[in-house]
Amino acid sequence: MNEVIALEGVAKRYDDAAAPALGPLTLSVAKGEALAVTGPSGSGKSTLLNLVAGLDKPTEGSVTVAGRRIDQLSEHALAKFRREHIGMAFQFFNLLDDLTVTDNILLPAQLTGTGRCSATARAAELMDMLGIRKHARAYPGRLSGGERQRVGVARALVNRPELLLADEPTGALDTASGHDVRELLTDLHRGGQTVVLVTHDLALAEACASRTIHLVDGRLALDTHARAVR
Ligand code: ADP
Image (tube, rainbow, N blue to C red; front, top):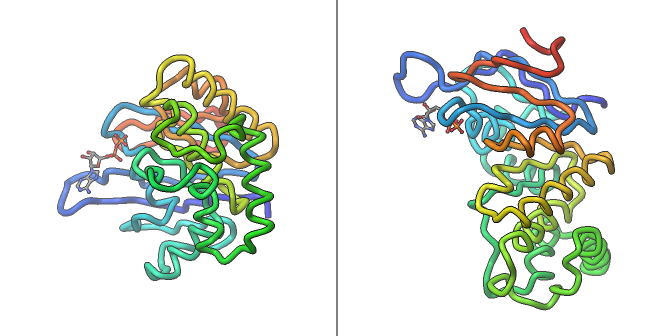
């Protein structure tokens, strides 16, 4: 399967708003693509990310992720689907301060019932890759913003998700940490990870995305893969 995300005629309307917050939008994201979603505040970026993550449901259209149509799944089935197929590095998914870095990273693996041994090996591999191995036994409160962000990304990747979703990954970071996260996303993309990244940061989009879409008032105003514009 070459498509990790397929949105067909997707629209999201909140309450009785005159215009939809998003769409109608048809968009597909291929395996291995790193897609940056940009646009002004209120243009529908978070709405799009929430629909792809199955955190919200469209009012029209279909959302297919990793070959599975998710817009009609129950909450329970969606939670399971997310744990198994989607890694989420969102600012509001905070790390747990009373667990070590390693235990934070292992959490999603425990939820899917992955064996402790293989999950621990995977966590160690990710910590090496992300340069945070030396903090394995530390508590998140002692780390810098950039390091915490890396722990969040490691946690998002521990179950080897088909899709990594990142929401403003450099938003709260100083310049040096922002640079680290940028390199990290670029490395992940080079390694074949499919990524969708919501950002205000055009330099970040340019540096680590293979494709950028720009939303204005919930509509696709630009897609650097011009063929995908409808
Ligand atoms: P962005 O992430 O680009 O800032 P959003 O997706 O958050 O944009 O919002 C798109 C539009 O939908 C905005 O007009 C926003 O006010 C509206 N919106 C978002 N969430 C809700 C909600 N839960 N209820 C009502 N309107 C919402």
